[in-house]
Length: 396
Ligand code: ADP
Ligand code: MG
Image (cartoon, rainbow, N blue to C red; front, side, top):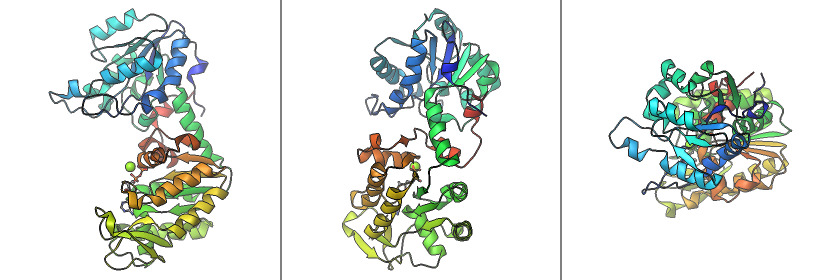
């Protein structure tokens, strides 16, 4: 089913509830440490302002637990200030997201003006998708627009529940862009379609492997995930992270790949250490087997070369999960190398996952990747082929 998008609606003079993701990291002084999420929300906000809507923005921030300090620690005040700078216009922050005071403020918004509701999660009803709360939010507006991609996999009151109680619903431009890129990569990829999967746990990626096995031409496996596969093949992996209870599953994935003609490429050399916290023990190990006492902490140079070639030759690349312990400089080469290969590749390149996106940013390559998803859980659930309630609610 097709998404209804915000630009197909007439917003002039209407109260538009725009669910955005302003869940930004804050520093110790409560200032916005990284405004990427606010900037990602700007196109739809600016569009609504330009269309002379009465713009009601709403977001969550962090995980308030109803503790006394939560309200001051997790207020959207810093996000409101940064948003106001970026928009170069006033952003009024309400002191709550429901209640009489909020209704009054909503009644006072002029066309093209912006009101930001306070952190939705100050009310546990938000995550519980409480229907009375959803109805109350819906009562504030004429139109509901969902542009918080990182929340589309959750059926919360503001991300899905309230859609049932509003007259008009649509997706914002960020949600549209995410769905288009992730959807195109999966459903109509330019071939060869190469997936790079890494990360700490193979068990996180089981469904991802399942979905990619029926679509990709090659899957390049790195990170700790790779050791579970190597171990399943009877290869020695020393003290590397492994999930002993997933060996059978890894064997099944290897079997399926063979049966379906998908190349599943595992590391043929490694960068090892004796322990992750001590980078001085860095040692390159040739061959797929890892000696006793060593831990595989990054893919080796030959493996990187092989990954790189396939990425450069690809028509589409999807990457999730760092291929090493990239937070430690001596074990970051493989991950940075994958990021560079993606930047140089003519392929449609798509990155999903928080740590992988952080690695791309650290390499200074954000602008050279076609699409870096703003969603962590959401992008993976999308690729896994799960239903996304926040997207479904925007379908016509
Ligand atoms: P993403 O957030 O991109 O989905 P994951 O959360 O699945 O990625 O995995 C990221 C984590 O995996 C990182 O913290 C990284 O250090 C860790 N990791 C990758 N390779 C290894 C390894 N060989 N040993 C230990 N940890 C690893
Ligand atoms: Mg992660």
